[in-house]
Length: 611
Image 1 (cartoon, one colour):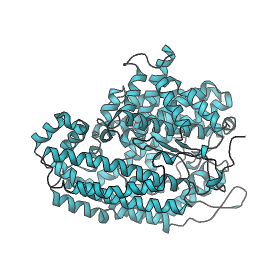
Image 2: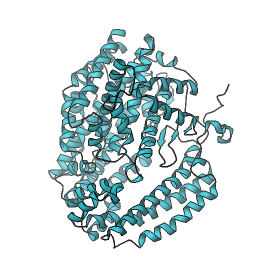
Image 3: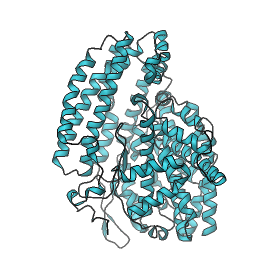
């Protein structure tokens, strides 16, 4: 009886405070928040006196420390405002706080913009000396990375021009979002009972997982046909985005857009192309999975609108539980990570980190938000089903990554990269899956195995398909060509035949799918989903193997678990690939991806044995 009434119609004030996150841990009162905002003006004014004087090491050190103080305080100011707004978007006071925080954030970026360009302009010998100076130990990796990038940084005036050009060159992505979000209208459709139904980007995936096949088909046809109607405009907006990225790459001295994009996190092009090659070597397993889905669902033809239908819904119903029971399940599942991890996990579960239940005006979905020097915050909309248990494990994976990093690293090295961001969360998901499978009955196992296979299909196979498409379109731009809708459509149909195999009937409407993927307007990003998932799978496999052999998580500093925990403590203290390699996962080799796709085959065989 401790579970409060909750849902989209329940006011925030009616959710007991014990089920809400403690925003007061950041600032005890609104007046303290206001005081912190006012104090930033003095810090910014002091920082501005450093401009033009960073050749002096003492001034440089002062500027870097001031930037850290400013950034850390703004992190807290912004989190205090946004967490309250996300908890209740109808709260006008929270909206006001967020507006003020946005303005402060903009002022901060303007205030610190001179630092990187002035540091990059320092003589190479001086930069190397500063890297070795113990006084600059908090900033040695920052200086090392700037030195690596210096060949691609332009003189100050030119950098200023490029910065000002961003608004103009971003028109392709802006036009895409305006067309898709505001101007595009989808026709009304019917469901399997002949009743009126709707399709939109917001409802599309919900419809695609429905048991109503007619609803799925009508949703697919209506949505794809609408995009096809705008195919030439959408090809033009994508051309604009790709040309813009190529322009900046060439101006900065890179070979092409891929090299420039990957260079931001020091990722070699060989990793990207190797990822595609490795996945192609394992496409036969995906073909086998699609054939199994077709057989189990009993369809003469298996269409794109059948891809997201679960093989069974029965198993999930038996995972109904309270939030407290979900916490116990997650703690049990993560025992292989050892006492240190479990103790921190319990601190998060019981220490006001989590906003648990849905209320009116609350942001949908879930996230983790790390606040250095305080603790992470987790937004949930908990429901009594497996997906919510998995989400809890996932978000707490992010949180403990942030928590351990902030405990160990100075502020300048605490923030891990996007490349590493999904590793800790997905490792937790994998550990939860194996724990749940070990305690599941047959219907639950079918549900869980289907969950895993779909996760790999959508996070590894599908994202690598997207990554390969990105390589294709950017190669065309590099060659001086324009992206023509007909060429993109034919490529997309051929790509789906290659990836999904003969069991999938590739309907002509599918040719428009490329045009609705927003990630293509953020070039060379999606491959990180596949690498992150693969790294997490490799970690979880080695951790569970060790745990099964030793029945203890920490068996020396060279154990798989100890190396993984060291990775969680490492924050952004080195390049992502180096941190992962030190922890035992080398993404410069095919190993992590192969481990993931080999596990995909094993789980597929387990599922076949149950059906």
